[in-house]
Amino acid sequence: MRKVTKKRLKACEFFDFLLSLQRKRFLMHIINNSTQYRKELKERILNVAMLEFKLKGIKAVKMDDIASLLSISKRTLYEIYNNKEDLLLEGLRAEENNQTNFMHDFANDKEHSVMDILITFYHIKMEGFSHVNPLFFSELHKYKGVISFLEHRHADNDIKAQEFFERGIEEGFFRDDFNYSIISNISNFAMSHIMETQMYKYYDLQFIFKNVVFLFIRGFCTTKGIEIVDRLLDK
Image 1 (tube, rainbow, N blue to C red):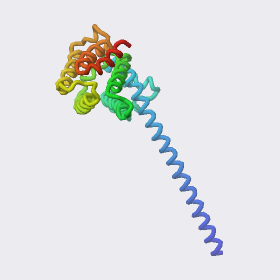
Image 2 (image 1 turned 30 degrees about the vertical axis):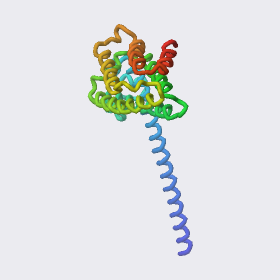
Image 3 (image 1 turned 45 degrees about the vertical axis):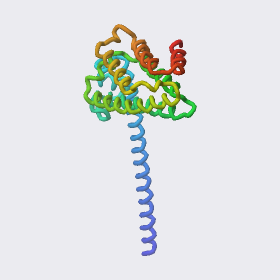
Image 4 (image 1 turned 180 degrees about the vertical axis):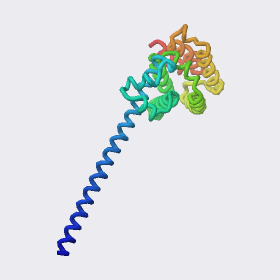
């Protein structure tokens, strides 16, 4: 009897162990699915929000509108993003990271010259401006967190710009008798002035960008570089 009882006890213990293992696997499956769903939902929220911000302006878009477009509750939206500024900032970071990674890979391709990089960057910016309401840019500066992010981004970009100019000089496309730090600062001030004076109310953003960019680019390019820039202007 004792032997039978022990065998039964071991069988029961093993059965309990299997049940416990199945429960753990089931719970892990639920957790993994929940985590994946939350990750995908977070990306969907960012995509929809940034699209709406750029189309209508930031102020015109409410958190309620975003929740409604995604068919989720306001509570779910606020569990992921505390407020509109957090959502906007995360969207800007994601876009900046995507663009930076793309341009980094493009620039590191040995087949691409400085002019290839410059022209590709120009096309990306022009494409971006074609889908953006000018209010989006003017309203960005109403958020402290966004201002801080943009200032840090500009500082990083200034360092990269200096390295880019030096590479352009080595490749023979950029002049070596210019102070590129001054050029960079003036171009930044020019774009800031355009936004502050709301010049976009009178001219298309793409048209403004094209005029400002090519004014500076043609100025610091050698004859070899200008020939490429002028071919781009004709397109």
